[in-house]
Length: 201
Image: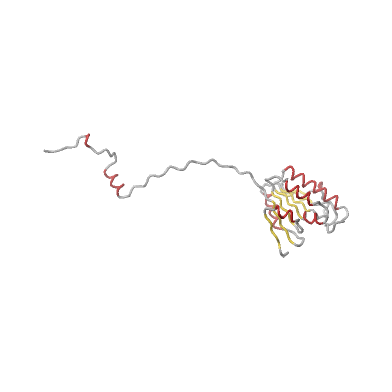
């Protein structure tokens, strides 16, 4: 007697015999897991820093100035203020524009300020400090470089508390870079980054 399989007796596995053999031998690729759900991007607001670059001597902080020029060249709004450098007939009305987004400002004094009673220095330094305070209040810059502002405080041209309050109320997105000697300890404590130059060569 010959037995035959009717459709009711056939295997319920729809895969072919070859397919099942390859599966048992581990020769078929494993099923790929579905990708994880996409997490929406969370945009973080830009956060500026208060940086201090100091030394025991007066001199040029070329790396800071290079960084400022590079930032302006890439589209940032940058202001460099040299509080005690004079001799170029500037003042607030004579500021110099470079690279489109870079403004360079010095007080309107005939020579560099070396002492606390320099003729005309008090008014000229106060003028550019008022401009700095305005920018810090309005937040219309990406980077503000305050060169020798600590020395201006030490020579009596700028009250330390005025500097502290202006820095405390600066916009969160603005980088403020302070360079030069005689940085007040209160400013050093506020800084996110402090760089000390120990040699001038």
